[in-house]
Length: 176
Image: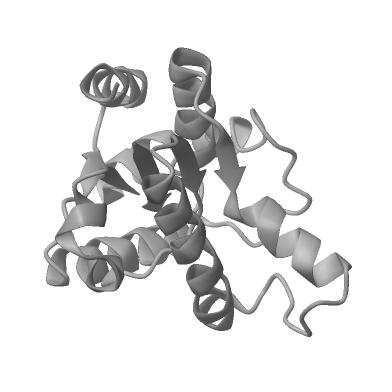
């Protein structure tokens, strides 16, 4: 089984992937690690700020890794913000049967009530180098964008509205 996790910034994609790794012992791939490896090695002129271009660049790589894992009946958790809303078009039903997908987004209410807490936990799993540009407004805009794009593509979005830990626990219970 392959588990794909995407969502807006700071929603806990990496935390959820880490908890799934601990629960399932499935291998885990961070698209941020892949991105930085390609950037630092000089295999791309893109920068960490080139989000849309990075999706176009990274998704074909991850897509083929997912196909390989499915073909070999191997498990994989892959997380990051570089999964396009129309990701399903790249897989036949044979592949889709082995893929679970999660998209995370905060509600405005959650951001308003918990912004300081969100920032406090931003580096729980991996160190964020600079969160100076993260504001409630920017976080809301990012979450609205994910919610809109993925819902328009017909994808389910897990909305985090009040109980973050409970939502994560529920997701962990639903997955293998």
